[in-house]
Each structure stands twice: as C-alpha cells, then as structure tokens.
Length: 544
Image (cartoon, rainbow, N blue to C red; front, side):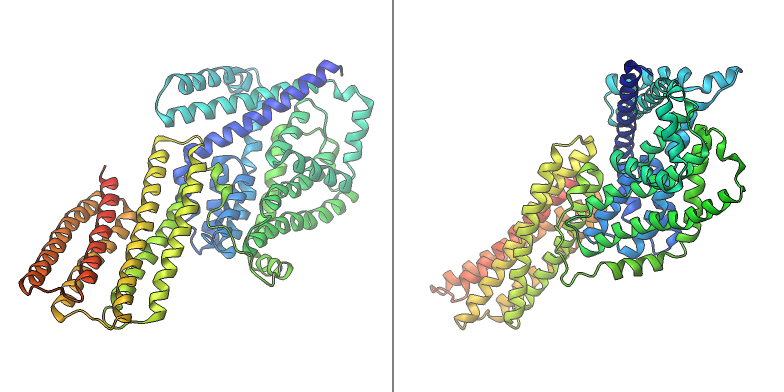
C-alpha cells in the first residue's frame, strides 16, 4: 500500500463523511415540518414512542441528531424523561438503516438488473439529477431533494474510493496483525468505542467497517466486538450535548449510555461463551457489507427486545445516579435546536403559547381588581409583565441567530410572524400592567368609579376578553376565519371605546367640573384600545 493509496483513503473517508452529513442535513431540512409534529406529540404509549424514534432516525439518517433533539426537548420541558426513553430506544434501532443503504455498494452480478443496481452504474445519474434540481430549480423542496441526491451520490463515491484504496491492505503484515488483534473481544470493543467517539457517528464507523469488507480485509471475529464498541461510542456526542442542561436532560443522556453499555454487557458474555465452545463456525469468514448490516441490525434488535419492557428500570437507575440537590435552571430556548430550524421555530412557538396564556390570565386578574383590590394579584400581574420582557428578549435573540441559517420560504415567514407575536405580546402585558397601576393609584387615593363608569369598563373588558381568547385560538390554528373575526371585533371594540370616552367627556363638560375618576377612566380605555390594536395586528399577519 503506497502513500498514494493512503491519500486516496483519506480523500474517500472525507467524501464519505461529507456525503453522509450533507444527505442527513438535507433530509432534516426537507422533513423538518413533519418532525416537529412527530417529536413534540409523543403519546404515553411506549410502543408508539419507539416507532416514532425509529421512524424519524430512518428519515434523517442519524441517531445522534434524533437523540440530541430529544435531549433538547427534555431540557426545555417539551418531553418528560418517561416518554423520551422509548424514543431513544427507537432511534438506536433506526440508525441501522444507513448500513443497509451503504451495503448497496456490494451488489454484484452479471445480469443487467444487477449491473443497474450497482452504485457505480446509477450514482453518476443520481448526482446529475441532484445537481439539476439543486442548481436550476427555484422551489425549496425540489432543491432539498437535489441536495439529498447529491449527498447520497457523494456518500457512494466516498465508499467506492475508500474500498478501492484498501484493496492492498491484506498484503500489509502490520494491518493483518491489527485485524487479528481486533478478534480479542475486549480490545475490539474498546477500539470500536474510540472509533465511534472520534467519528461522532455509529453510521460512519460501521460504514468504514463495510469499506474494509468490500476490500475483503475483515472477518466476523473482528466485526462483532467492533460493532458492540461502536454502539457504545455513539453516545459520546449526546453526553457532550448534555453538559449545562437540566437534571432530566442529564438523566436522558445517562439512559442512552446505559442502554448501549448494558446492551454490550448482555451480548458480550454470550458471544464469548459461544465462541469458546465453537458454536460460531462462521467467525473466520470474511464479512461483507450486507452481513455487517445484518450484524448491526440484529444486535440492535436483540437489545430492543429486552430494553423496551425494561424502560422503567432505566428511568429509576438514571434517577439514582443523578441526584442534584438543586435543579439547574434551564435556558428558555435550547440552542441545540438551531441546527434544525423547523424544530427551533416549534420551540419558540411553544414558549410564545405559554406567554399568550399567561397574558390572558393576567388580564383577567387585572380586571378582577375593579371590584376588590388585592396586592398579591397586582404583584402577579407585574410578574407576568416581567416574564414577557424576558421572553421577548430571549426569543428575539434566538430568532436573530436562526435567521442566519438556511431557511425555507415557509420557515422565514414563520420566523417573521413569531417575532411580531413576541413584540405584540410584550406590549399587551405592558398595557395590562398599566391598567393595574391605574387601579392601584385610585385605591391609594381613596377614589372609585361610579356604577355607570364601572359598568362601561366591565362591558369593554368582556369584549376584550373575548378578543384575547380568539387570538390565543388563532395563534395555535392560524385559521384565517378566526383572524378575520378578530379584526371585525376589534373594530367594534374601538368604536365602543370611543363612544364611552366621548360620553364621559360630554358629562364632564355638562357639569363644568372635572370628575375625580376621569383620567383613570380614559387611561384604562386607552389601554383597552391599544391591546385590541396589537391583537388585530397579529390577526392581519395570519390573514396575509
């Protein structure tokens, strides 16, 4: 094996890794809107969660990406640890699909059908179509499909390049010695752990084994321990991602580690025993890409069979290992999700939903102070206003970072909409707090509204409460009919506000005196108008 073969090998590995990453990122981008629905609506049924985890991982071609997303959801409270565990188990099985895709490179035969199925035959066509879609179309989905095809073709070219450069390895005594050393179960497993930890991907590590198999240089005695180790080493990126997260997020990363370590602990002794009694005669046979894919999937399937029923055990073990005396306060938004814009937007939408609900509750609290002033209730309104300031600052900063990413037209539109919602929500809580301040000053000065003025304010407050409820519904449904209804009701409310205010001015003029409650009355009505205006702006955005 010459220096040129080594350089070709390095180039093949780089091309293979880039192709795998590029294809995975493009798949995530294309499937992002569906993923956010799937992963954030996990049911309490563990089997459903398992299937969702497996399905999402098969789509995006990366268990690491799925597990990091699940970690982020647990960290911000979108998922409980209990519901996350089946997702992780499913992701660990779903990642084996990549090995089956790579095994296409081993297809051989003399018939036309076999020749057409060989990557060397169809890969040039795939990358040609991919470049056409990516470069010469203007629709985002077609460009994403083109990027997926380009990534797949690069992956296959890299695989072919790697295997071609390795053909002479069997003649290198040092390499033969290394492969023989890998047949030691413990050394092989440790090597697999290091390989996956360095590569940051079990799929890429298994792909390198398949490239060796294509060159005819590795047997099953080395493959099995390496596969066991690779599946432990794949947890390293998730463990790194869990630093600085909440207690449950750390527990989820710990569960992922235990799943893979205990899987190897269960299988390795059985393998050693069967090997020692000669019950595995195929161990000396050379492995092929397809048989490596079978080994990888078989091991994961066996692990899944006993891990899924034992999920409660893993949850309890993780809780026993990680006992923080004081909960680490998680960030409002998880920066790990910025890599998947649709999920980052879903996270922002969830937090804005929380803010809108808190704002509506705060308005009801403020209006209740008309009848009976309460310092604790007034303080809760102030707390909501402070919460809105925090939410807007963090969401604006987060969306600004997200805007620099590659976004689809729909994602860009959603980002702009959420920024407007954050701003409007913060302004609404300011006006609600201002209403509370006005009522507080009246109480301090020993003043109160006459029955007629109080009835006016309560009538307007009822109309505004209905608007707030409709706006909350519209935020979740994006229903244009509801949005148009909000615009219509906002006009009615503004008309009533003007009518009541003009009537009050006429009364003050008629008696040629200044009503002691007049300024508070007009201030509160003005706050009502401004709240309604912000709600109407949000509704018009939905209509547009």
